[in-house]
Length: 284
Ligand SMILES: C[S@@+](CC[C@H](N)C(=O)[O-])C[C@H]1O[C@@H](n2cnc3c(N)ncnc32)[C@H](O)[C@@H]1O
Image (cartoon, rainbow, N blue to C red; front, side, top):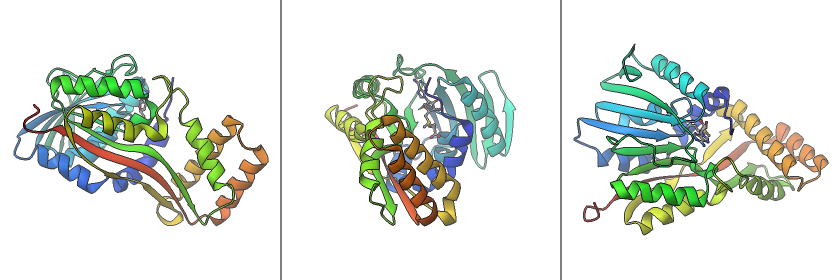
């Protein structure tokens, strides 16, 4: 199973919040302006980051279904969201939260998305996914797009890795490291060969072909020693380990790259893309 630790998900959460594209979020918010309630299904929900990130943008009454194959992440999501809320209570479906003027019901669904791209409850009006699509395959995203289209559902997809890794200052091995890392990103993460760096482009094309209007933009992580030192180090470690697994660079070259960036790096930019896709008025 493709495992994402709760520590890792919590560590990246503040940077994810800072990085998501504001125009894309505004487009999603405006699509539901004036509504009193909304049912949302979040795919690959991890520890519930999408609820924290999007609740403020959406109508006052929200009903979320969090889908993940990892039972520990789902259990942790309920704890994290209860702590994030002003008040929380158990209910038959899961938990009911209040945060500010938002009333949010959250239920969880443990399920392997690779076999069930169309997993949302019938009542769903918006599907969201954060940091998920690059793990999936072109075939799976095509199935997802068709399933959304068959119900006329909008999709808010954020933080899809787009292949950019930029270190400042530059090191001689940066390019080879980036290319090897991006090849590693194409390894099967349970959905078939992963789309990796081409995921955002592939799903955006698919949704456009099906008649969706898209608002899209960059949501790169900008990591530096001042604001995100631990995430910066963990990300460099993750890149180095992945490159090591490819066997495409000598271990000594990877060690040299990693060591040099430990002392000297000022910033690391990791590219992502966000989009909000909805059907045009005449397409519904
Ligand atoms: C990079 S994490 C992102 C989590 C969360 N959306 C966030 O933004 O913090 C990817 C999530 O997808 C889940 N996932 C990966 N493969 C899956 C699958 N086949 N079925 C369901 N969930 C899956 C993982 O368990 C993990 O929680």
